[in-house]
Amino acid sequence: MFARVQTLHQPVEQLDELTKAAREQLPSARELSGFSGFYYLTDRNNEKAMVISFWETEEDLRQLEANNAAVRKHVEAEVGITSPPTEIFHVSLHAS
Image (tube, rainbow, N blue to C red; front, side, top):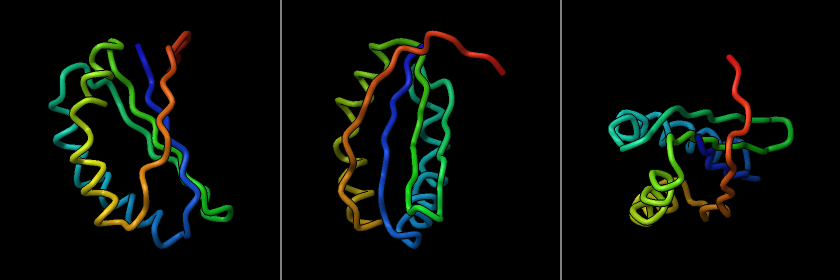
């Protein structure tokens, strides 16, 4: 499994807008090949958020990245923030 991680530093209002945008996009994300889960974590006191999505294979995640340019532009226009850098991690251990 692989994780796609983005860290944002934005005013609370923009973090709230991003929450709304993520909620709207989640149903279509569930349809993507290899999608395995999603977290949107916020720290309102420090105006920070982390977006973490999980993918079955690295190829699934790379395909998402290749197709994600249009979605990033939409979110940037709607929320008014530039998409932060993406980090990719191999999930070495998972427990729930």
